[in-house]
Amino acid sequence: MVAVAASIVTVSAIAQQPPTFKSGTQVVSLFVTVADAQKRLVPDLTKDDFEVFDNEKPQTITYFDNSVHPITVVVMLDTSGSMTLTIDLLKKAAEQFLIRLLPDDKAKVGAFNDKVQISAHFTNNRDELVGAAKDLDYGNGTRLWDAVGMSLDELKGIEGRRVVLVFTDGDDTESKTSLGTVIDRARAEEVMIYAIGLESNYFNGQRMVRSKPDRGLRKIADETGGGYFELEKTADLAPTFTRVAQELHSQYVIGFTPTQLDGRVHKLAVKMKQAGMTPRARRSYVAAADKITVSAR
Image (cartoon, rainbow, N blue to C red; front, side, top):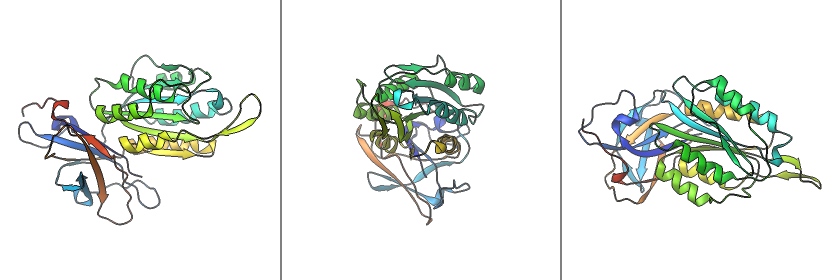
């Protein structure tokens, strides 16, 4: 799988040890995870393995880095009534993601049902994060898009890579925020969203029913450059949360200098020159010069 996020940033924000650029250089950066035909992550690629297109026009890659970059992430879990039979498995699966955070990563943990709760502060203390996951509360409805919107609120003003990891087993039922609104926000605010959906069996008060995850999950993941995983078995929960952690710590950073900052949404595409590798790229970015302040170098 490949996950790609794009943003217009100062060069100094893309890497801890950036190369030398001219004063005032702007770069569209993309975080790329590459896997082979067997879905194994592929290390040791070079700049020449990638092609990048902006509105279908090929771009010259002016920046490339394959070191690990810290993330700030909000992990948001569905704890509505349909999750009653699998909530303990979900919390243990989420732990597999949290314990794989690196020392420079930071996270918050939250839950959504007919309300939305998020832990008080970002931390790199994995024990604290695991404890917060265990303490998440139950509820009834599913405020999925409200939860994603509140996660974006929590990430405002934070520098570096920002990620939302959201899990649900059903459709949004009570949000005031729409899918389209959170997609637009995530694109404009340059946040990558990973989504995990599960088909879940639960008792609806009359009989056992099987839920299907909201179809908007795939759309928001694709648009923002995150991965989408749809599961049929609870046994796949822990391996999938583990996979997300591995992807986020195995991403290449590539960048190009935009030729037109017209304030519009531009289509993005990443392609691999080498056969047998499948990129999945963020599909768009906002080409707005006023999104950042470029520092002189």
